[in-house]
Image (cartoon, rainbow, N blue to C red):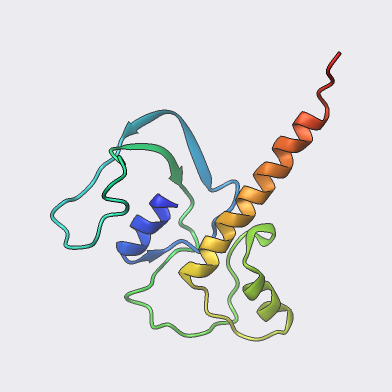
Length: 128
C-alpha cells in the first residue's frame, strides 16, 4: 500500500492491484526516497527506510494528472480483485472512472484471498 501511495503521489494510478502484482522480497532492500519533492511522505513517524515488497505490472497504469478524469468503458484489473463498485458498473454496461479508492479496495480483496489460502493450508494440519 505504501508503494501504491508513492506511485499515486508521483501521478500514477496502478489500476491492477492483484495477488500476482504484489511481490514480497526475501530480504528488505534500502528504500529509495526523494526528499527534494514537496509531496508529503507516508507515515513520517514510521520507519520506511527499507522496502519489503514491490507493486509490479504497470501495464494498465495511467498518469492521472495528465489524463482527464472521464468515465470509460475500458476495463482494467484482475477480476477477483476489482472493486465492487467497478464490477457493478461494468455489469450495468455503464462507463466507469477507476479511482485510487478502487485500487485500495483491491488491496482488501488481496488480503481476503491471502487469508483464505492461509486458513485453507492450516485446515489440513492435524494435531495428535
